[in-house]
Image (cartoon, rainbow, N blue to C red; front, side, top):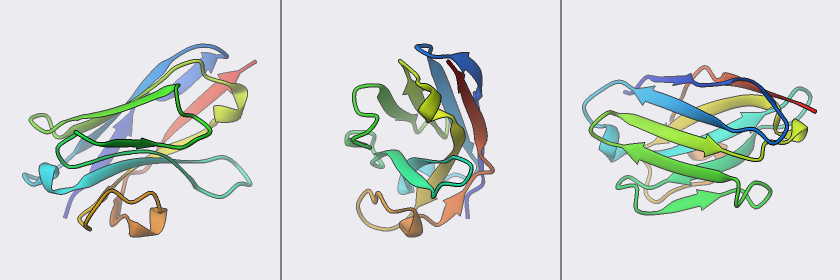
Length: 124
């Protein structure tokens, strides 16, 4: 089992940047593919980005491609999400998730463990 704790959210002006972090417990962090998802009030959870176990493969939501960089440091048991050129519509709670399943899923249902989330608010 793995426990995930997100940090780095906050209030930022449109056009600004934030880096989210997700720290994982346990000694098998490199066994998990990691993903970031977000959920805005009244909306369904949506995929944001994911990274393979080695960090060599990354995947992004089309709506945010070009503004995101996901990375991981297996020595620190941490996954990061660098977000730039933020827009008010990026306002949401952002969740980190881990999956032991094969591949790098983009569906939230494929992830086994979730953090509590960190709020990102973008003002216009």
